[in-house]
Image 1 (cartoon, rainbow, N blue to C red):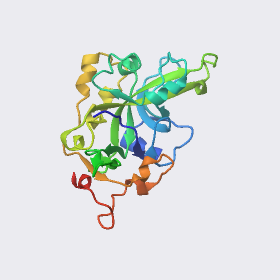
Image 2 (cartoon, one colour):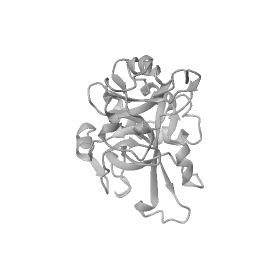
Image 3 (cartoon, rainbow, N blue to C red):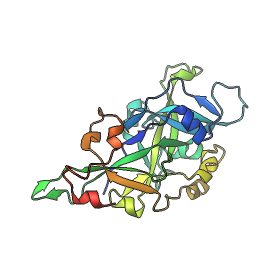
Image 4 (cartoon, helix red, strand yellow):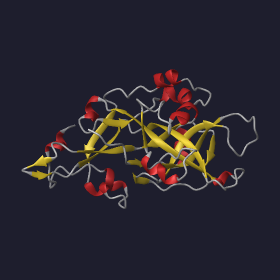
Length: 262
């Protein structure tokens, strides 16, 4: 199977994220509305550790909450539209890929999510006709945020003022890994989650040794996530709202074998 992690839900407000992720500095100029259908190129919250660009040289690095766009734009890119194709970075190859190598060494982040969506194709055919893929919502069983491992980058148009903080575009990619057994029944890939006790090391910008960083990228243990089928309304990026993460009703729905996977 191929494919990528291309949608997730993120409804928590900055105050909640500051508390949950122990953020020291909020660099959010405009709050994002709760989004139950986050799609590539949208603005999203990211937690990262670095010296703020607005502070004097030599100031200590601090854990920040920022808004970035989903779809990584490398600093060398000629056109920022490349970001729409760089929404995911495969754990197995990100240290070698030119688009991700430098960010993996210096610019790692956490991307808070309520959960994410994957589409189950099944056999793809039933009764001689193609079957529409069934979306599933996958989220932590304990109701905590999903701390997805991410990379971030800066990009600036060639003639923009480099001293103007607003001239820099911040962007991100979600790191993906092989799915754990249960989730793998739906899709073979999943976002890589960073456990709380690894946050400090993962976000530390002074860590750059690839082998040491890889040791932090341990797939989540089986049993931490729950998954259930949801409405195909999530297929349309224009649809948004908490109803998208509601389980399909057991009665009155056109139930399929896919709904009994979990």
